[in-house]
Structures are given as C-alpha cells and as structure tokens.
Length: 162
Image 1: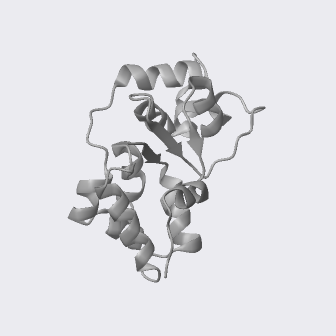
Image 2: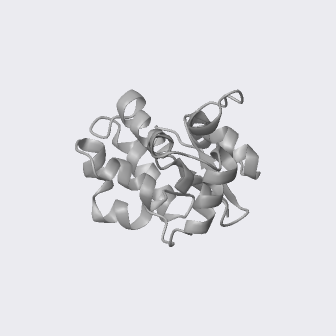
Image 3: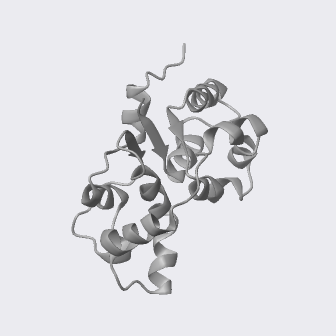
C-alpha cells in the first residue's frame, strides 16, 4: 500500500481555504478514515507544526482518535534527516538557513524510509532556488521521492462529498 506523507501546509490550506473543520466535516472524517486505513500520515515533526498551535485545526489534530492515527509511528532517523539537509539543501547550512527550512527535512526523511511513500505538499517546484530556499518537490526529486500536490491526492484517493 502506498503511504502519502502530508506536509503541514496541506492541512493548513485545506482548513483555511477549502474545507474548514467546522464547516466541511465530511472532508475531515474522510481524511481520518484514510489515516486509519494507512493511506495518509504525518511525520511527528510536521504534525507538531499545527498541533502545537491554536485554533480549530489544532483542536481536531489533538483529538486522541486523530493523533493516534495520523501521526506516523516511527522514530526519526537523524542520519537520514542530516543527509536530506546536506544533499538536498547544502552541506554548510547556517542556523538562519535551518530556521528557514523548518521541518521539511523530516517529511522527506520519512519518505525515504520506504519505496512506497509519496510526499504531499502545496509547494511548487522552483528549480532555480538554492540552499534554504529550495522547495520540497525539488528536494524530493534530488532523492527520487515521488511528490504530488493535495488536489492530486484528493483525486487519487477518491475524495467526494455527496
């Protein structure tokens, strides 16, 4: 089974732009079903980007049934995260660079753990960007990790209301 690993921005944009948690409950119920089935997960660090904040989306993510199913249950491989940073961004990153990059390397490192994983992000490829400015799709391409956007995922997993 293919595992789709969600970038935090996928859920943020879904909630804020298209499917607010308090107005389009079927979307969130469907997403939870996909997590239960093992089709979608979030690396713990990416989950924390939202869950540690305030608001309806954070409340939804912090529900025991959601957190227990959407968070990828595996330890972070620090060596793989370091490889993503070194080869995906630059070998000599500064603290400012690392802050700008954020938690994206954890997402990509989680995808590298198995061949049947796909990164899902709202970011768009910009191959001319360098170092801390690189976009997730371009770093994924460096490592041969498949990467799709959220709407491709919704179609692939057959989301519909009605």
